Image 1 (cartoon, rainbow, N blue to C red):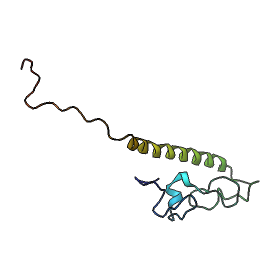
Image 2 (image 1 turned 90 degrees about the vertical axis):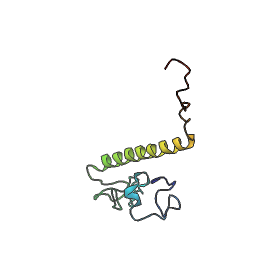
Image 3 (image 1 turned 45 degrees about the vertical axis):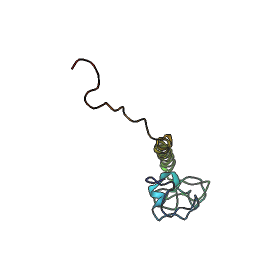
Image 4 (image 1 turned 120 degrees about the vertical axis):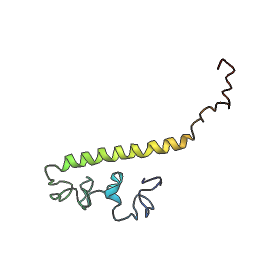
Length: 110
């Protein structure tokens, strides 16, 4: 989700889109998979996970697995952060602060 909206972008109609042109780069939880079918997420705004990828059997760039792991961690963090504000909103408003009566109203010594 972005901002206070329940969707990932202004064009979103579901996981398969449509999406705005920069949606996947701004929403790490929605990184589409590599177009070569290896199962790793696309890197940045590219269509593949790395420059070496040729398919499920690879080959892959030396840092490809590490970047995929980092993207997965970033997606998990972003998803958790998106849940926190929603959970707080669902809990409703907090109890109002007590109001003191005008004039002190304590009844004790001044």
